[in-house]
Image 1 (cartoon, one colour):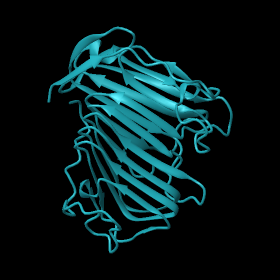
Image 2 (spheres, helix red, strand yellow):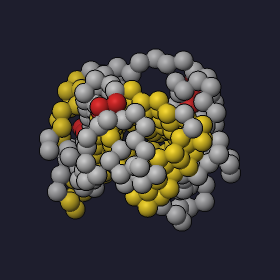
Image 3 (tube, helix red, strand yellow):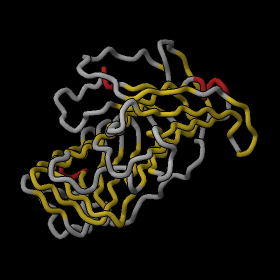
Length: 277
């Protein structure tokens, strides 16, 4: 699939935090090992203190994105961002920053260490065409509480990335623009303080877990033509439930669907392959 990405000027946001991890950028290298992969680049995410983790990810991308957990990374390394594409222009258009100073989640108690921001584009407005795969590999399991995706990327969040058991955490997953987000953790029971699932524009969000429990509140909101599916959740238990545009919210396997009236079946949408698109 050929992508068309418009590189836009990044909007200025209110600063409220201090960056706690550093990023080392590698060089763009030529390769010819895989179809649609002619150039690759890697960024290393380095901890500034032993307690540092990456708990928030903001994506403004096209193509495919995979977010994964991997044990055994070198000491002091919080993770890697690997980018591959069919042209150097596509690969060099990716920027990776610690965006804690510009994080818009003011007052979010979850976001204590900083936001990893990966985007396509810079201050130049132009049109970009090509194939792209962005892989985010994290060293810590179950610590990410906030993932946002905008633009047109297909984003796969694998098991072990998101927080799944916490009495205090607020877990938030957002899909905007025409992005499609797939949370693939079918054997994981999610139990958090608050759960927020949001989709807007023409985006889609598939939240595939074993069960869902929110001890304080769950807010599921679909706007525009967006759609949200909570799949394979045999149990959905919340103290306070708020669902907006109930017809676009589906919980096909849940014994209690609360106010959701979406009719999507329990069939899982095909997760995009881990390859450039």
